[in-house]
Image (cartoon, rainbow, N blue to C red; front, side, top):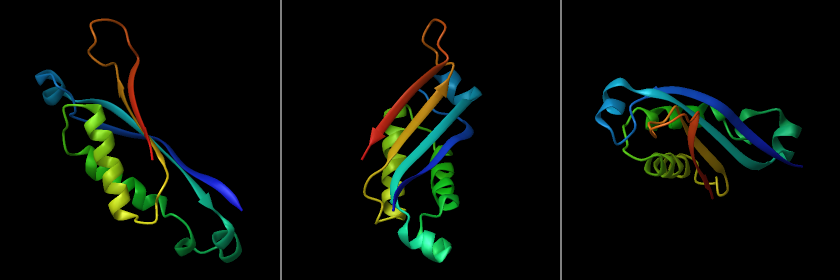
Length: 117
């Protein structure tokens, strides 16, 4: 029974960016996580041990969001590596990190970086 687990809209106030103002003032970031999953065991057992505990996924993401990075690319890959370390059986997933109102010299609602493993 194939399905997908998603954690969408994880909001954080964080201090990522190349500009000093971004490091001092911070900004709103949103992280989205998606992974394919076989629901067979969890559907039969109704036991958390038979699926991905998404509260632990959130904890890993939150811990990485507290450590400033200059680039969204670096941050996104660092989160992905931490997820792989925490969940060795997690082979395939998508991760998107979005920064609200990036300093691009004009109107821009979001800057986004995504990785697909």
